[in-house]
Length: 392
Image 1 (cartoon, rainbow, N blue to C red):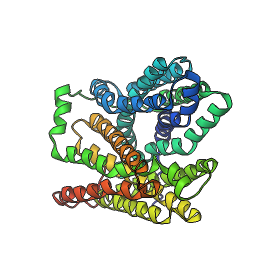
Image 2: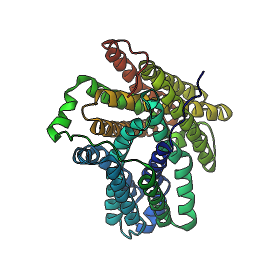
Image 3: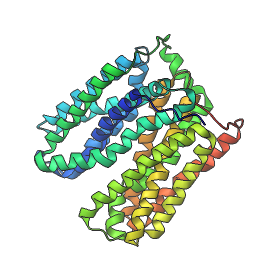
Image 4: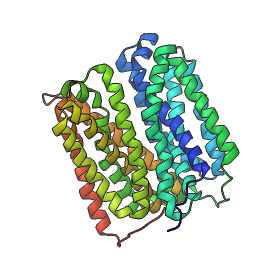
């Protein structure tokens, strides 16, 4: 057999960029208490920093992508990283809540377009048969942000103050921008589609179905992951200090899942779209059953991490495939769909943990909406012709 082709350095540079952006998104969760105390606000008010970032992704991302689609993609990536650096520097030197909130919005505006356009660039840097791996590798930066960036950022914040954390994140952005400038080639010149032409891509029922599937299937991830701390403490019986290493182990599962998902999406996209969500649902049920047993909870949570993030490449690939008339906008819209799912999962988890059911019911509740997602994608794929091996 021929030697398996390796992903080019440029894809790894996109991974670094995704790592920096993902760290900026999630690191605030580990700094909320410090920020609240330093700015003399409540933790609930500080939580608006998370909401503002997510809304910037959901609303601002597609709008910004519509405008950016006409420009050279390498220049767009550089411009987005410049905006990202500026937003995090503004966060680093903010001394009041309003400025910090504004800076989070600025930084959040970059995430959707960067991931969407970056995913398109990643697929064009490799042969079609490796497109799924390329997308999965880029999104591995997001998983690594959960494994290394978030715990590292929280440690820096505890040691040197939350402002320093944002300085370090901005520095990561500088490194990523320099690497893009040096190594990412200019993309082939394209005839820009009109705004109306790009929006018309969403008249495709398959594209809308793909976005809906992302929302339904992905809701289960944040439904559990966002509330893994109360499950670990209240059900499994771990001390609060132990939750950090539990998250690291789950994060390693996310990295492995991304790799497996990218390879499986290249081999059989249809099977990946159906199989991985079913596997995640099963993993959630197993976590719910084993949560009261500490030594069993950790490996079960690790498996959940694998099964959940294995979904990401296939979901992104289906959207890009049916959104080929406006690939950047379609891919960015899927990032918004992921964040809508994150918000929905957070709402479900919050309702369950505050109810009489308590933290023990969270894994089961998290599995409910993905079941609808599996049923939905089955109906959609049944309408399509068999497709055993697909590219982007």
